[in-house]
Image (cartoon, rainbow, N blue to C red; front, side):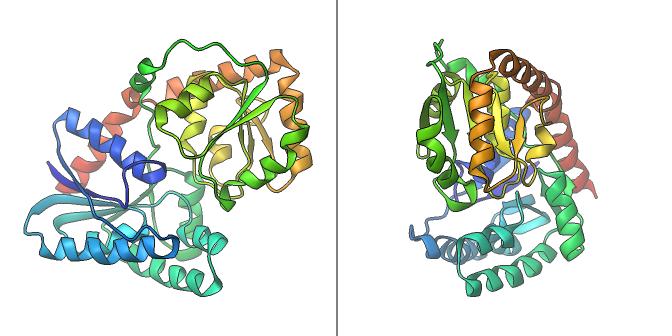
Length: 316
């Protein structure tokens, strides 16, 4: 099967997911090609420039594919012009809401109009969150297929044996408003430990810091399903996170982690310090998270579902 993947980048977030899926499908025997497109590295110009330049690249390309799979709304324009029998668009999170949180009202309005338009171009829409799936159905009437983003546990073999740093708390994610990093910084001086920020770091370095930590904090204002939850589960690092987006789909409060409301520094601080001081509860939560990821989220469990998705789409 010949498939073209399109994403603005192939690291972090949904782009990292695209890269991991491509790698596994290539190992399985699919012919996967990644479209790489340069774009203007300025905040408000990144997505528009990518949409234009990738579309031009698709129009000029003569290659034909069984399936073209675009990741996130800006990639949909190139998807539209790619010569392929079937077209897939994946979105992690509500795109227009993310834009609204980060940009002006005018930009947010354009994003809402664009979002509604491009969703119609795909033969299949997918997301990694049941919450996102329900919201798109409720808001815009679109049907999304739900597919978990798997965790490649083999990657962790490259991590060295690491000794825990006493009461180390870690944040792994973008330095961005929707991630709530400012809320964590607000309470940092009151936390009974040291906070390490992994905001612009290679995956292996971030995972080394995560493995050396006693606690992961996810203070997000909005989310789909952060991959770092699965990574922390696998490394048996307990989590304090906000109950937004798809996070509660993975973390059950006081079972596999601790959930707090967003934008509430006092509750976040209490949850972090309580868990740092309660090793027994921390261990129980970590074990529960580890069991969950092993039973539900590895490639061994999910690869057959991905293969079936593409094969069924090609043959439909």
